[in-house]
Length: 308
Length: 105
Length: 138
Image 1: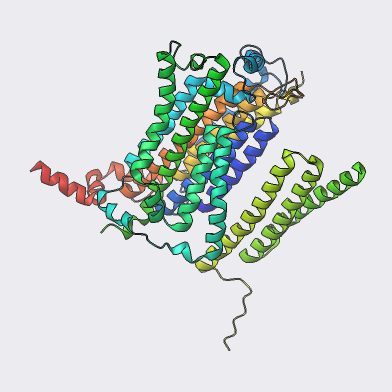
Image 2: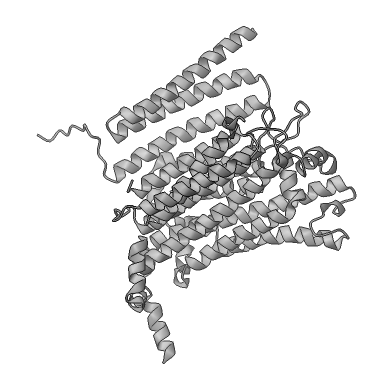
């Protein structure tokens, strides 16, 4: 297999299949995220970088028998280690006995949100999610600093440039029809994450996918006129600021950091408000980071037209 | 009445799966890129529509019916446009159909 | 002892080893990144399959169901998926820069260039900037 394009497409299909497997294992939120992130954004970014690095792999010059030996030995040791694990689907495994029953039983009374995964993600384990948002933010900053856009391209963004793809009438019309629906669906997933599968991450990725659809059809220049670089960098930081700001606001009102009980007159309403704001921050950061990533990768492929 | 709805939805689900399988077989067996897109997109759209309508009959008049209807409309729109985009991209990058007869004598 | 009940772990180990082999045996950097993502997906399967209870349902509260699958692995894996995509994006950006600096993304060619004339290939890649630095040194 030496054609990297086929390999990237197969990796996307693999992500979609694993998303459907997650659905079969009752993990609906995880399936949603894996389908949107793995089969969507990951494939897009790999294809964009394939455009930059070249599509074919060189043939190997030696036989990797040492690597094969290491892999077989490690695999055998791991399989030997699995003999002590609990059977698949057993209800008395240790993982179900300590913290999880408390989350399952007390979540409706303490937080009142039907989607227990959202309540654990945003409230019971809010610190981990704060760290995760900061990781996404850091990846955005890292890619921004690795794939810099130089200053002399600022004057291009003033006029409206017709893109190559604007001659394709069918694609243009269908994309214009679908784009508001995609963005509306992203908002629906964001705010319905309390009652069904969904939440901030999936919503951010779907919003970014809508913007990427617009970019692919109407050209990078037009898309960057709408989603200006300054606004995107501002939004990236605003999401993290909202998340940490909710935590600080909880401290100012007398509770602990990220203790949403004190936000309103009633602990349950305070939890609802806290989860709403926190998921909003997550969604904003994820959407703007994904859009920034795509813009940075794509700019590299067309910058030879704009710089001397 | 229940028996009729159940039978129709069974027929639709089974025929939808059959269409999807034959689409996959066509994807593997057809000789050329354009014929493969033709097989995959037509049978895939028809199979997905049959499965979704079968599920809609099972769902009754609830919110799930409306959601499935929206999914059906969206997949009809997006699937056909995607295969159109693929064929246009292949033509633009220079791929010609394998059995093309040109009339230059 | 019925060891056939452990088949999900064996699938996970098989996927992990496939990903591991791709990372250490192939030289192309993009293939290594894809192998890394396969390894990550295998780890996700490990956690999610541990959390599943037979006869349970998705952990969304509903009056009609009593037995739910464990929501804790779902939360951890949700975080892990997003961190995985962040890592992959950064890795791809690094691969793009390596291609611009060394001219190839095969690992042995990169090592060969690193061993030999190191300054020369950097001068070729960063043309104007090196001239700028050279001007500053004066």
